[in-house]
Image (cartoon, rainbow, N blue to C red; front, side, top):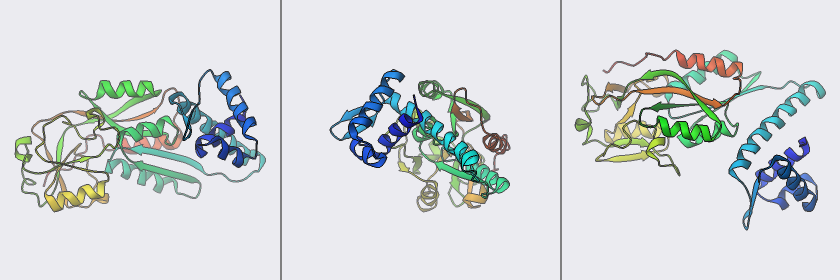
Length: 305
């Protein structure tokens, strides 16, 4: 296995075509195909599946390409540092379900380290993409939750993707509303009281499984449901339609504003906020510092207004 072979397969994955990759790499297509075949035989897996629409990575190929990209990235860093002797920025990337507190922790991390020497990336996205981003080395860690309902399914998915879940802190279940909502001033809200208002849920795209839902009580028979794909739209729907969503009760006023509140739900369901990482991999100092920022939210819940 050589660095050149790894560069070949990543180029093929990026181009989606043997012919286009060969042009990009300035090699003949037969030479490129031969190099890939040798690598597949040595690795004992099929990296690409050939189709009439081009070449697509197999599930094993996706995992292999993740490691290849990481190795090539590390090689480039070493080359820049010791051969070209250029100043290279250290990188940190995190993916997360739609948690404003996780974004706020990221903001604090960037403020502490600055962007002169570090390159940061944050992806607030679907559950499946959080898992995929960590598996494929797009993010070093991912932030999501487990509970009694989804725990077994999430653990199975993580194990299949060579990932592991680490708990950070437990939290309860709250209805997240705007302060002008008819139920906002109650000390506790039942699902029956919420039934006449639209429940807002984050859309999970091609993975609509109840186990991947970002909201607890995902199997509850809601009378009205509206799905959205970003937090800003969700907040607008809360105001415009008196909608609500279920959350951990950890609210960040600095990012979302002070027009919203969390009210304890009568039907409590415990969940564990945690992070995922690749199995057996050491976390970078930046990742460890980010987790320290997240742990500051343990036991924190904004009181209902």
